[in-house]
Length: 186
Image (cartoon, one colour):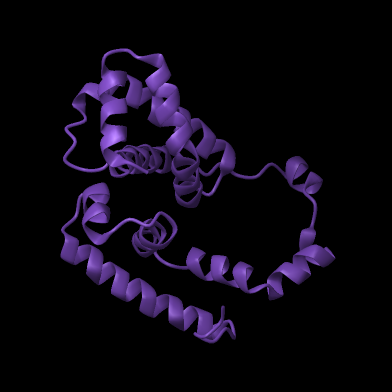
């Protein structure tokens, strides 16, 4: 993806160009959505946040200075939105009537098969990482961001990103070993 082209698209958005907004959305909405799902762990909430992110882009496109890539800027906005959402999230007690309507998937053969699936094990292990470690792993490996871009997105020094990445990898290796997955799995 041409980052210069994205910068030009954002400049056009700042001028009120709706077609440019559609172009930016088409290029980046899936990446932003996947990032948000991993942060908030709820697809419906992530979809709402994607809308909020791109609404902010429409309103604040003039603030984009081009010091980072459009992807870095978008993921930074998305991260802020997700953290704000997570702070607002409340844990209401579960209604007994509602609890009785929930299905118990424990005996579902599909769920049992997924438990042995290595990708499912990996996701489970990633879910056990601290939010800081999971966030760094997600940005580096799933969103292919470099250390400097991750530092910009998270608003932390690059050396802190490197340290978190080191400890996240070490913890993940331990969790995978506990789950019976060796390091050489494909």
